[in-house]
Image (tube, rainbow, N blue to C red; front, side, top):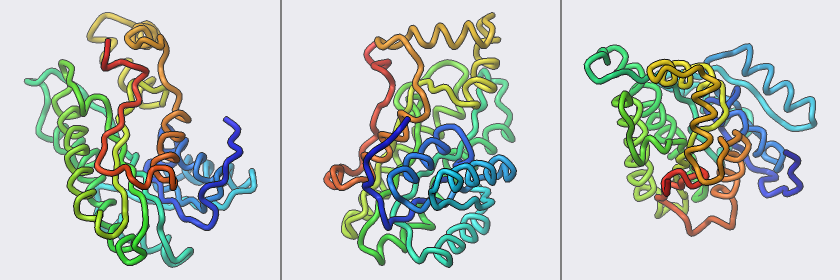
Length: 264
């Protein structure tokens, strides 16, 4: 999507899960609007290529290896951004994975891995950038939750729990940072056409329902009044709004971006 606005010139945006999917779309959106962007991810080759593609379009972007479940890895990535650009104005905590099994089949290892990445990873990244933004007395944190954090389905114990936790974490961090003029919000996407949905969610969940991935995606499109699944760039647009001056009085919110799914 072509973007004409330039709301983030001179600012620095850090995006976890920035190689692709919702994180990749957010990184691209902030770059298009003038921000210097650090894409953090564990899939180094894809991440490096994404940053290179952004640079080829004339944007300032770097790729950094970051395992969000590892405090030292998060610290190293944040330190690298500060060494290069000296500030962090925006954090989009988008890194995440999906697993989903019937309750009695969820192993502790499966539970812990998803919690480590989808919830603890968001906590570690929020905690790492908070002192920078507190010192600046400005900044925006956008945590990517899910509609699974607002409501739950069968076979989603670990995923729904983690995404609900992201919403609670967002509210708590918003309270802690409000005095420093830092806003903290969450985005709760509905089904979105990312690799995670196409390659992980659709085969797992669709398979349990006797549907092919394509059939499952078509059925999910019909769940919402808009009768389609979201595109990653649409989440990038909401993230950009929440980081903009137009949203300075919005904090502690969990914004549903679901095509009206919650009404259905």
